[in-house]
Image (cartoon, rainbow, N blue to C red; front, side, top):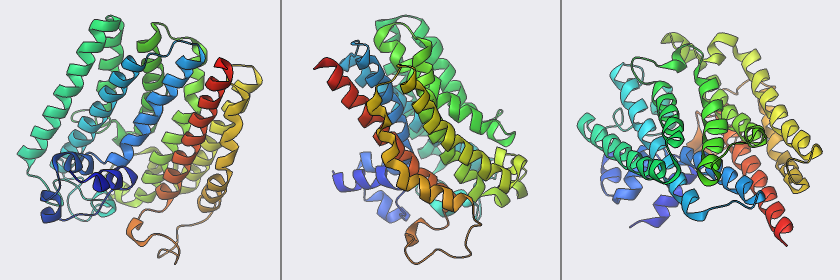
Length: 334
C-alpha cells in the first residue's frame, strides 16, 4: 500500500507513465484512473448533507457512510466511462486538453480499453450494490434518486447523449452536485427532503460548477475545433468568465441569505475566510490567460489556468462551509 500516493491522488492528478502506474497498488491506480482529486467534491456534497441532517438532530452515521461510498463509486465509474466514450469518439485522442492536464487512462497508455471497461464495470457494480442496500433500508424513492443521478453522470459525455456537447454539461453538474447529491443524501438519512435543504445545496453547487466553467474556458478553443458546444463555447470567453464570477457571488450571497432568514447558523459565515482565494479568482477571471505560467505558479499544473484557481477556491470555500456547519451543530447540541 502506498498511502502517500493515495493522498497525492486526491490532492492533484498525478502525472505518471505506464510503468509508474503499473507499480502502484490497486487503490492508488483506481484513484489516479478515476481522477480522485475530483471525487473530493462528491465527498463534500455528501458531508454537507450529513451536517444539515445533524442540524435537525437526524444524523445517521451508518447511512451517511454508505451513501458517501456509493456516490464516490458512482462518480468514479462515471469518470472512467466518460474517458472511454470521449476516447472512442476521437475527442480525447491526440494532443487534446484532457490528455495534457493529467494522464488519460487510454491516451496515456495506462490501461487497455478492456482493462478500463473492466474497472468501470466493477466500480459500477459496487456502486449498484451500495444503492441496492440503501433502497432496501430506506425505500423505493432512493432508487429513483440513484437512477436519476446515475443517468445524469453517464449522459454528461456518454453515448448517445453527450450533454456537454450541447451546452447542458454545466447545468447537469450544478443539479447533480447540489440538489441531487445533497438532497439525496439528506433524504436517505431522514426520509424527507425539505426545501431549505435544497436551498442550502445551492452555494456548493455553484462552487463545483465554477470548476467546470474554468476547465471549459481553459480548453475553449480545443472544444470549438472539435464541435463541442460547452457553455463557454456558446457564450464566448468574456461572458463565460463573467458567468463564473456570477456563480461565486451567488455562492456567497445564498449563504448570507440563508443565515439571514435563520435557515443556516451564523457560523456558516466562516466562508468569508475563503476571501483570499476569491480575490485570486476575481483577478484571474478579469484578465486574459498569460502566454506562459508565472514564476510562482506550479509548473506541473500548467496548462491549467482558469480551472486551477476555480478548483482551489472551491476546495477552500467548501471546507469553510462545512466547518461553519460543524461548529453550528456543536453549538446547537451544547
